[in-house]
Image 1 (cartoon, helix red, strand yellow):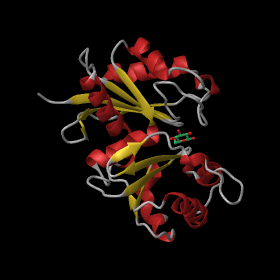
Image 2 (image 1 turned 180 degrees about the vertical axis):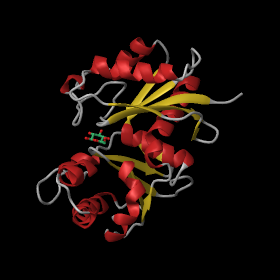
Image 3 (image 1 turned 120 degrees about the horizontal axis):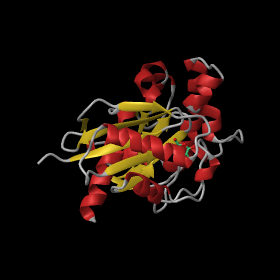
Length: 253
Ligand code: BGC
């Protein structure tokens, strides 16, 4: 029997979903995307997630994993930086279980991406400490130690020596907004990587997010002790990781 789950990736600019074949970590059908409406309420986002999931006409028990751009503690969003503040304090998992009427697992987007890379991608079999960073509207982090994920690390909010939050200074969203050249952006990322190296001493960095397909333009400009490698699953990692975790949660239950 094939192992399938649906992964949904909620981002600042789009919400994307695909069914994932969990044996290979590959999409079992073409990804479907709906742009994230500006200032969308949680109920609106939940409605979009439902539409995306139903597009694939899944069986009743097919688990759904949702990768969400905020820390997730037992389904609850304690705070959120880049979507409506209405999410803060809400139980996102309960909302989505009710809306979708099926098993749903919600996890932080960078943790989902990190998990995807550990299971199927660039961090497969990696030893030591792996720090996965997703560069998008914000900066997400997944800290993996000897294959185990330490969830909700939120390194995008670490203060840099210049007093700014890492993601306010050097996310890919900031690069777009300030129209930074890749060279200028790499200089900002250098400060971020220096800070993370000093605090966490990873053995390897993995860089994900949509911009990771352009890694040749900025990764070689950053100097670090640990190697920086591009995410193998690129921006599919969140969908794949969330689907994989949802499958595990549903089969443990
Ligand atoms: C959020 C994180 C998220 C990251 C990337 C940050 O602003 O606090 O939870 O992983 O953005 O989306």
